[in-house]
Length: 115
Length: 111
Image (cartoon, rainbow over the protein chains, first blue to last red):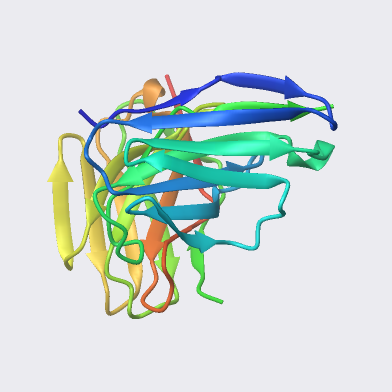
């Protein structure tokens, strides 16, 4: 089973709202990732968690705040977003985090629209 | 800047033909190479991964890796209209810490 689940599937929020995206995997993977993908562009890495610790933050604005409550869950808290933050937000997981050598499995994504 | 290059396409092939998708990369230290398929509005789906020089086959898909020439390719035999999607090449980087994605090649299989 290589399933990564994400909720919600779609989200519309205003620039003053606070919302959270949720990601879950039950494959025993110890690395989890957040990516952002704009239309017709490849995924852009935002954060990497390894063994529930934040390992990589790709200079993401503080209005995006990741959280890893346990080894199966990954959240992305959103606050005061801008319209240009509208995108598909993808969660992925891999067995380990070893400098991109591990196979990453993606969840279905959350389509976010910021008004 | 470590680069992963793909022809954006669209690459159009008739149903039943072989589709050939190519990817070149700049980092000689790269060790892991992945092909993802992405339908419009959906998330990337892993198709193949390859670590060693040569060919790796899985059903209708064959990944080919040539580290000396720094390219990796994906062949799709007996192409079907359902194969129409964007194919993303992803490469780990020796000095980096995560996957580096190409911009993707759009494949259109016509009935």
